[in-house]
Image 1 (cartoon, rainbow, N blue to C red):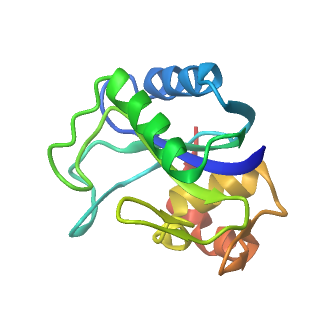
Image 2 (image 1 turned 180 degrees about the horizontal axis):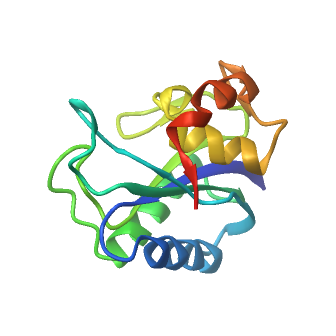
Length: 161
C-alpha cells in the first residue's frame, strides 16, 4: 500500500455536498483506503488569468489515502469519481462541481503523458497547502520539502469553513 494525498475542490451548487459525495466515493473505491481528511477551506476561484472574484468561491480540502493502485490507475479512479458525480470539463481551470487532483504518491516523482506527481502547481496553491498543513503539520511535498513555510505564507488566502 502506498500513501498519497488528494486535493478536492468545488465551486458550484452545494459545494460541501459535492466534496462529501466525492469523499464517500473515494472511501468505497476498490484499492483505496481513506485515512484522514483536512478541514475545509474557502478560496477565490483560480482561472488561467489568475484569481477571479467574480466567479463562485471554491471549497477545498485534502485527503490522505493508502492505495494499492499505481499512479495511472489512481488517476483513472479519481477521474471516474468526477464523472460519476457529473463533472463536465468545459474549460481548463473553469467552474466545476467537483475536482480531484493527485498531489503526492508517497515521495515518488512520476511523469507520464496524463499525469505529473507531485502535482506541478501544488506548491503555489494556498487551497492545497493550507488544508494539508492543518491536517499534517509534518507534511512534505517531494522536491520542495516541508510545507510549513508555504502554509504560513498562504494563510491569508484561504478561510476556514
